[in-house]
Image (tube, rainbow, N blue to C red):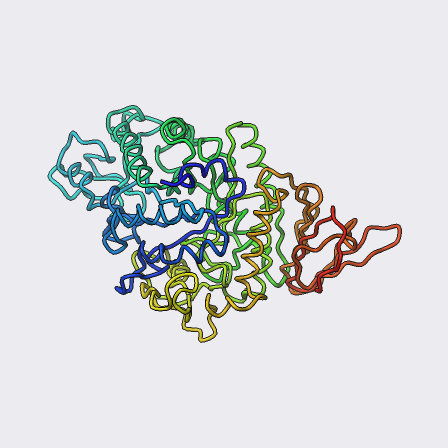
Amino acid sequence: MTTTAVDLAARLGRTVLYQIYPQSFADADGDGIGDLPGIAGRLDYLAWLGVDAIWISPCFVSPFADAGYDVADFFQIAPRYGTNDDLARLTDEAGRRGISVLLDLVAGHTSDQHPWFRASADDPDDHRFIWSDVPVDGFEPGPGLRGGYYLPNFFPVQPALNYGYARLDPAEPWRQPVDAPGPQANRAALREIMAHWFDLGVAGFRVDMASSLVKDDPGHVETGRLWREMRAWLDDAYPGRVLVSEWGNPRVSVPSGFHADFFLQFGGDDNGLPMRSLWNNSAGTVNPAWAEVPAWAAADARGDAESFAHAWREAAEAIATAGRGGVVGLPTSNHDFTRLVAGDRDADQARVGHVLTMTWPAMPSLYYGDEIGMRYVPDTPTLEGSRLGPTYDRSGSRTPMQWGDLPDGTLGPGSPGTSRYLPQDPDPDRPTVAGQLGDAGSLLHLVRELIALRHGDHRLDVESPVEVLATAYPMAYLRGGTLAVVLNPGRAAVQLPLDGAASARTLLARRYRAEPREGQPDVVHLDGHGYAVLDLDAPEDSRAAG
């Protein structure tokens, strides 16, 4: 086992995470479904890109009613993805390239085909799941000899594991305390599952719906206590491994024991507003419950990144106060949300979003294909539980990775490894890795340059301070006191006074120029979808063209 697998916790402040939807990424055996050997075959590409860790969405045995988030065996890789040995080889090969591997841990529920649930459905004394003897709103009829009704977490085929209730009620006897035998057995099982995969070289887990374990838990007090216990066990038994939560509220989750938590399209007191106010342009996955909020990353320039910046400040302060360490995660997208390129926002506009993601004091999470500008593909067929509502179908963000006609040996095997899990983007002008590799001005090369810049300049570490100068058009901030980032996602030209801009060294820029002014701050000019990353501490030998 390489040291990369065991020291990720110490490197999170500089880590760039890359999310892989395995069935869509790369197919090594030609059956049309992406697999673990396919991922292994693309490790040279990921190393070339510069990512530090990959997170693989669920790859365990499952009937795939919810794309693998309905697990039927937590200890075995699903045959369509390969074997446990394939996973061990993947972690080893990734480690040789300096890349850590995270798996997706579905902690809150199983498939209704899991042996645990089948046993519980037949045994009235088995309390690994939440059972009622009488009908209860939201419960489903049990399929086994015990009769009764069970509580699902999401789809009816996903029975909720019993971690207890924070508040008991004699009128509702299915509410068990968190220290009851069933909840304690499930906590022990979580440790057993994680240990199994850690021993195969896995560096950590992204924990699905981490806030949902203990039921009726105001303020997530008991759920936080559970995860702090897990963190204490982890630090003792597997130091250096990490837990990253799908909670959507890093102000609460990271002090509760996680190493990182993402801003998401849901979570927290404002139901995901910080992230949605950046990216959501109502062009892909649309939840009618979301208030109409203009996106900051939109050409019409009606949004504002202030709610995002405010939420980040609150989270950073809470993490610092807790004293345990940890980072906020900022994704470009994910398997449940609209891609950065969607609707009328094209890859040209998306460049500015990538600059924000890679220069903000958070752990960037790059969703597969976003580095080439893959789009949310409307009207993609619903598959494996992707549709959550009439306007919310996630399949458009899950289409096959667009490798293009790569010659064999060019950062991995050639073209035949393309997944057919879903139809690929039908646009004949769809972006591909092959089409952008040779183009130094492509989005792919920009993302690679941004990752290299993040790795090479400690002012971009998560721990380095940020001073926000403006949150709209342009958005501007200083990292480490002397690294200026100025962003214009809108289509109209904008400007901003900035001391030292005209004499600064331009590290990355597009559609930018700086105007010196005698006795006054210099002026930064950005045309539509322009950006600049400026080193104010070093004079520029030759200013980059806009």
